[in-house]
Length: 92
Image (tube, rainbow, N blue to C red; front, side):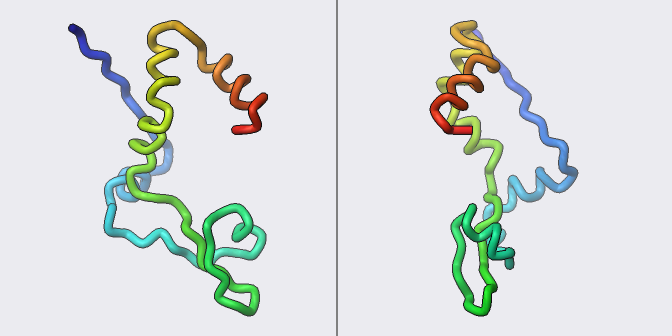
C-alpha cells in the first residue's frame, strides 16, 4: 500500500509558533462586537476576554475534514463542489 503526503502551508510568519505552543493562553481582551462571534467572558463595563485561536489549528482543521480531503484526493469530489455544498448548508 502506498502513502499519500500532503503539505499544509500558512502565510503568517508567527503561525508555526502559535500552532506548536500548546501551553499558551489564547484568551485575549476583545471588543464587544467580536465577543458575540467567539467564546468569551464578560468582564463587565463592556470589556470581554475571548478565546482567540488555538494551538494545533492546522492539525485540527485536517482532522475535522479528513473525509473531505480524502474524497478530493480520490477524485470523488472537487474543492469547489465541496465549498458549494458547504455554502448551501450554511456552513460557510
